Amino acid sequence: MTMKAFQDYYSENFASCFGCGRLNEHGLHIKSYWDGEESVCRFKPKHYHTGGFPGNVYGGLIASLMDCHGAGTAYAATYLKNGSKTDTDPASRYVTAALHVDYLAPTPMNETLELRGKVKEIRGRKVIVSMTLSVKETVCAKGELVMVRISEESLSE
Image (tube, rainbow, N blue to C red; front, side):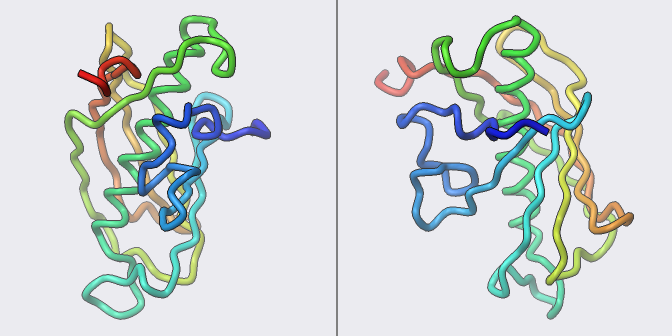
């Protein structure tokens, strides 16, 4: 894994996201890295991330983690494909066009969640990422995301 997370390269204009924004003091502050051909994010839920069933993680948190990890994966994969440097080239950011999550098993609290992403396709501004969320060896959720690149200029439009 690299020392600096994908999200650490986001410009200040893109760093306030609840899930991955380093500048959001109330956010989740997830961090994503390469681990070979896959992206990986590890997250330890807090006691207040519980769902409707005691001892299990809220499903909305799982979707949020996939959303932000997918955006970071798309960002890093595009730079890698283009041979660009994330810290020197113009900033770009990805937003979610579609997110599909299958919840396969209860996701227990008090355990580290591991998200793994694989880029299925990069075409133009669109990146498709498949993802799993596991606790230890159990896959608790899987998903597929369609991420679309936006630019800093589009924020002012």
